[in-house]
Structures are given as C-alpha cells and as structure tokens.
Length: 385
Image (tube, rainbow, N blue to C red; front, side, top):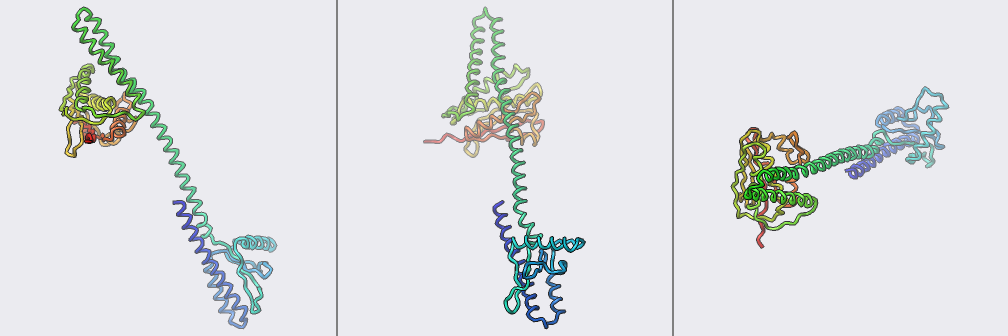
C-alpha cells in the first residue's frame, strides 16, 4: 500500500510540476511578445496578464537579467507571502533570499528580446497543493506505522494475556486432574481400613485403587504428550468411549447428585487417534456436561455413530443450563469460563487435541438456555490401504 501511494504521488507531483512550468512559460511568452511589439495595445496586454495572474496559484517572481527582483516587489511577484509593511530594505532581502531558494529547485524561465538577449527572468517554486501532495506519502507512512505499532502492542498484550491464562490454566488443570484420583485413593484407604477383616471387600478396594494409580500414570503421560506431536494408531474408539464413561459414571455419585451417563455407542467404530489424549477430550466433555446440570437430577447422553457425511461422530448432550449465543461464541477460547471456580482450559485443550492433533472438528451442535447443550466431535474415517 505504501509503495503504491508513493508511486501514485510521484506521478501526480510530476504532472502538476509540468503544468505549473507550462503556465510560467506561457507567462514568459506573453511578456516576450509584448516587449518585442511595444506598439501593441497595452490595455490588451495588461488584461491578459491580469487574467493569467488569477490562474497562478504558486509563487513567482519577475527579476531582471542579474536576478534582482523588479520593483515594486508586490506588483512583480505572486503568492510569495511578502509582508508589505516591512521596510524597503527588508522586503528586498526577503525577495532576494526567495529568488535564491527558487533557483535551487527550478531553473528560471528566461525572457529574451528580438536579439535573443535575456532581459528578464521568471523564478517560480511549487504551489502549496504540490507541497502537500509531496508530503502525503510521508504522512501516510507515519499513519500506517502508527497503526502497525498500535496493532503490535495490542497483539503483544493479547498474546501475553493468553499465555498467562494458558499457564495458569495448565497449572490448575494439572491440580484438578491429579486431585480426582488422589481424593479417590484417600477414600479407598479409609475404606480399606474399615474392611481390613473382609478379604472380598479388600480385593475390590485394591482393584479400584489400582484404577486410580493407573489414572495418575495416564495424567502424567498426557501432560508430557500435549507439547509435542503425539503418536497415533488405529484404536477401537467405541471401547475407549465406553471405558471413559464407565470410569466417570462410578465417580459421579461422589458429587452428591443423581446424574445418569447414558451411552449409545457403536463399539465397532475404530479411528486413528492417540488414546490417552482423546480420553482427555471425552472426560472434558463429560465433566462439562455434569457440571452444567445445576439440579439434583439429570443426564448426560453420549452417542458414537457414523453421520450422513461418512465421518465418525461423537455427541455429548446434557440436560443442564445451556448457553447464550455470546457464551457459545467464546466457549473454546483459552481462559474463558462461566464457572466461579473454573479456569477455562478444558475445552480449549480439547479443541487443540481434536483439530490440531487428529484433524477433526469439535463444536457446539446445539444449545438452549434452560434446556441443555450438545457438543459434537467429528473425526475422519480410517483410510483403507
């Protein structure tokens, strides 16, 4: 844009400069014609000069052959800004200085007599309009530079804020992810103490404790994987979804609500995924669905199927409070949350995992305030080869 403005401005300046020069040349030709024919009617000459002077919008000074301005200065100059209240000497100094400056920019137009002898000269310089056009590219460059600078400052601030939100969110997400199995382990330890004399209950408790220890290993591996390109392979997606739903269903009663996690899963569906990261996506969707239900009773409905476009589709529908259109637009932004104790990173991480790592798509399929929300995840089918 700046280069285009510079080129166009130079073209305009060149055209206007040429037009002004031709005007001065015409002025000189008329003057020369009158000098060559002193018997011509002076009234006609004065009329033409007067009309021509009205069209001149740039500074001109008529001088003799020695470059001295003709007197009276006011009558033999145009648009010079001469202050006639100054003394004659001051006016002369001003006009002589102006003639020197004009001569540095443009060669004067010479007026010659019949013997081709220079008897007078017309000095001129750029008009105010031409000077403004010459300054236009500089002004535009400054304005564009200011916008770029402001944009850079704004972008840097947004980036720093987003990075801060991500780091804080990651720390809180790690604490939350570790907190759930750790709390369960503490509970299982108490149960183990209570049932130490009952081998059957002890074995059941140990089995659940093993599940939580396995989960701690999964969480540790997740956080080591999220920063690098994960390894993917063909996995039975139906079994993975069922596994996560079953694990979460066993722990929902701990929050003091009667929430059912209903499943409609086609366990024959396979996809190229990283199982540990994709489990994280499912958990985040389940967690959001459960936390969106404010009443004591509700349900989260999970469905895995092939859609009409031939893509693997996972939907998680809750009977919670739903979302407004404004919340719906911002729900995947890092750090955005409507929860009093939330940190707004779960859905952002899920979006990164689905779209960047798995080439899929995650979005809010439907939502209505007071009626619930449905999230959808789409994945490409396994390529045959």
